[in-house]
Amino acid sequence: MGYRIHFTTEDLARTRVAETPLPLSELGTAVRTLQDRSRPVLFDAWRSRVAGRLPAGARMALSLIPPVGWSPTFLNLPRAGTPEELLEEVRGTPRAVIESELAVIAARQPLPRWAHRLPDDAALLGQLLDGLGRLHDLLLRPYWQQITGFTAADRAVRARQLLGGGVESLLVQANPRWIRWEPPVLEVRMANEAEADLHLSGQGILLVPSVFSTRSFVDEDALPQPVVTYPVGRERPLQRLSLLAPGAAGAGPSAALTALLGRTRAAVLHAVAEHPDCSTKELAAAVGVAPASASEHATVLREAGLIRTVRHRNTVLHGVTGLGVELLNSPRAGSSR
Image (cartoon, rainbow, N blue to C red; front, side, top):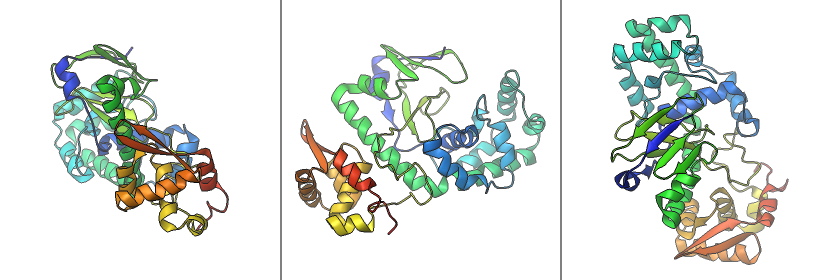
């Protein structure tokens, strides 16, 4: 069961990876994650921080986007832009589209009573979208810099997969639990058991990273090309940097670690742990130093056994060692500054 996405040579050439999650699509996934209580290690700190602060109108969105099941796709506009711009665009959704999507959902699961009035009640639709906007301000906006940090690290990994093995390597490794590549067909297992054949006819697909999802979703109506989401990589080894935990955004080396290694070298070790298999250029950008300086500090850390460096073609890639992780996660290194 699932989507069978049929590729041509042109589709493979036009397949690409988005730079960041798509705001409304990620909001819909975050709303589900808030309610489903799964993956407690990753998300319980985030849930506990936001659960007691749900804004007025949020209950409407929560009841229309359940933790499991179907939700209206017109609310998850699959494109880049500011949340304000995208929600304003959703306000203009044709009545027939809203009515059609709600009818499809109603045939599969119960809808809230008020939802049946959405196609004909602009004020009610506005109330729903205002609630979604407030949910974005609570669930995503305070963490967006951290979210984009995760996706930037993931994008670097995907770029190396593409360079090392082509588009096939990218498709095979995007989300093995939910996506299978059987050339020339990409099979995407859907949580809602939807089943369809999608012939791309030269459009290619946009692979979109998601911080909140472990599954993959397909939006064949997205423009300019169909969207397939996949979860960002979870290889970060820092135990104390629980995903979206309170105070985690912008966290850096502790005072104890800085005193031991020096400010810049501690920042380099921290950045290597936060961005597994980063190149020297990526490391320099993460720390805010020149590539030559990053290389010098990486050499000292490597000689001390705190990081390892391997060569991939013409690029050197850095990763933290077990000893480096222990140092970063030690009680004194993890204490507040």
